Length: 276
Length: 183
Image 1 (cartoon, rainbow over the protein chains, first blue to last red):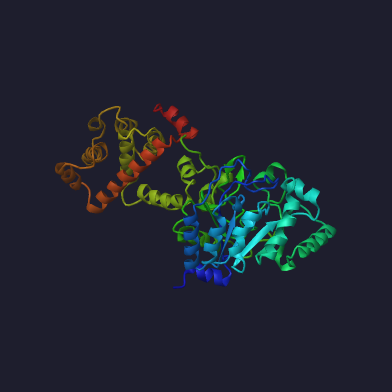
Image 2: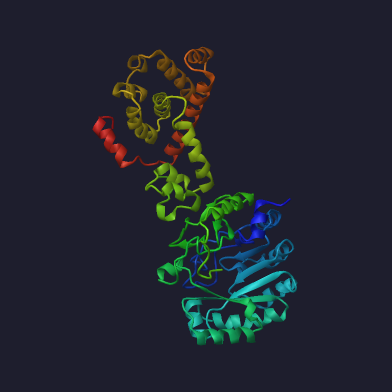
């Protein structure tokens, strides 16, 4: 049965991806983090069976892929198995800082080789010092080591660069670097910092509201939001301005509300800031 | 307050229409924590308690009497000025609030019967003695009884909501109560 959601996704009215915040804690504490994530952050973890049910219902409704973000998703011991399960339902992209990929974790990711799973790694600058100023000491070196190993395992890797400003020369060197690491230009995205979460305190980034943010349904332990840039945390308080519903199951409840909001948006209002 | 009231800067997408005219009041600001509840509850409450086939004055008798029985500070304070605006006298308002006898303040037989019925519905366990029901039906038709019952029910809901969440009465209402000598 074709649902209204499926039709909207097919017609491009609604983005096809459903995001899930697997957890909010992180081994890093980046200066522009949307969710003020850090090692001591409350975990606010989605149960694995909840995530599988969301993916299953997303597929039934007509969504076409799922995204996993956090926090650092790979802090969850169950993540490799969970990714394999989710990839059996819909294609998956998982966002990571790639600093936790020791031999044991990489071995557990072997099952993802050839599966419809993309591992999206954050890398913000071609030089260690400016990269690590934003992301923490040693980050650059760990990423440079992890990416070729993931690629070598047959895992699809993307690089996401989040930057306040990156000039032409730095961008060219960054692209040369990701190519050297085995990641093609098609798998490299550059996006601005969004002024939410910790970025507010550092005066970083661009203001962005619903017109600028793709209407990607985003599920968290606190409810369903408009875009993965929605469920941000500032001064330990969850932002509600992009909350859609507290109900996340059945997924049809927030999906229908999101579609109503999207259809009510004035024509021509769409993302202008390349935030994705 | 027992919960955080959502201000305009944090208003969720589905709640934003309620913030378009400024402060939407504490009931909306609390319900905005759960937008999917807000967007169905407010229209429902509006239909149940707003203008309808049952006269405004009659509805305010039900709302104020029920709120007084349930001892809802927020609802009694907020609806006292509304009841005055709906045409109830100061003596009638005081009687509905329990300060004086309703039988003494109200002379209209239909309204006296209505208040007796409200006391049975909202003041007891909900089971209304047959004689009280029969008396009500002498003055009100079936559709009116259904509406009046819904007004009591929605008021009960709001009484518990506002009391449990310790919602604050607006300064404007408190000032009006002072002016009227009904604080």
